Amino acid sequence: MQNCRIKNLEVGGGAPVRLMAVINLSPESFFNKSYTPPEKVFNKACELVENGADIIDIGARSTAPNSAPISVTEEIKRLKSTLNEFLGSGILISVDTMYPEVLEECLRYEIHCINDINGLANDAYAKVAGDSGLPAVLMATLKKPGDPVGFDSVYSALETVMKRAENAGIKDFILDPAVGKWSDSRTSENDWELCRRFSEFKRLKKPLLAAVSRKTFIGELLVKEPQDRLSGTLALTYSLLTSGASIVRAHDVSDTKDLIRVFEKLNR
Image (cartoon, rainbow, N blue to C red; front, side, top):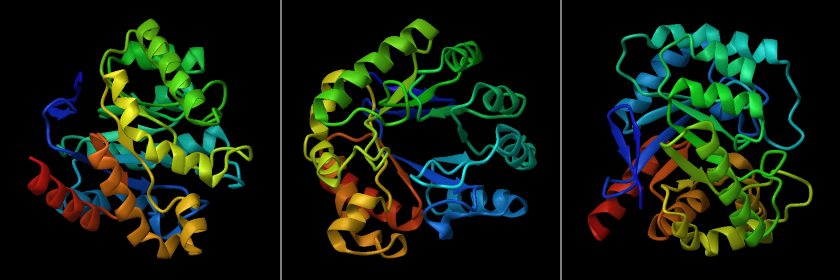
C-alpha cells in the first residue's frame, strides 16, 4: 500500500492508525452535539489533540440528507472566522468542502489537507486542489457526493476518483468508500455490504478512511438516535480497522483513541 503524507504525518503503509477528529461549524448537522460555535473552535481543537486526534477536520456545511442548505458565502464566512486562529499552532487542519470558491479562500490560511466528498468531480475544484499541492481525502463519487449504489459501483467510482487525482496532479491522497446515507437510493444494506467487503478496497493500494461515526444505518439497526449510537460506531470501527482502514474520522475522539490503542496492541 502507498502511504499518504499530511505534512509530517504518515497515513497508511506501515504507520499506526491515525485519528481525524470532526469539528462542525454547521448547526444544521445531523448530530447536534458535534456543533462547535466559531469562537470555541480553537480551544475545542486543542482539547481534541490532547485527547489523541492526529488531525482536525473542519467543515462548515452539513452534508447529511435533508439538511438545511446554506450559501457558499455563508460557508466561507464560517470557515474564515476560525482558520486564522490556527496560524503557528502546529495543529494539522483538514478542510471539508466541495466548492472551489470555498477552497480558494481556505488556502489563504494554514491548512494541511483537503477533504472532498465530491471526489474531484468538479473540474474547477480539482484544479484548485491540484495546484495547492496539498494531500486530499477523496470520496467515492460519480457526479454527486456518494451517488454510487452497491459495492461494485462504489469500487468503480473510487477507480474514477483515482484517475481524476492523477489528472489533477494529486499524488498524496486517502480514499473514502462513502459509507452512509448519501442519497435516497442508498439503503442500510448497501452500507453494511460496503463494511463487510471493506477489505476488498485494499486492492486499490491507497490508504482507506473509515468514516461511519453515528451514521443512519447504525441507528436503523440499533433503533437509536445519533446521540445513542456510540457503542455501535465503535464496534463497526474496530471491524473496519481489521479490514484495512488506515485512518478513522470520528466525533468521539477519546473513545475512538482508546479503541485504536487496543487495536494496535493486538495487531502490531
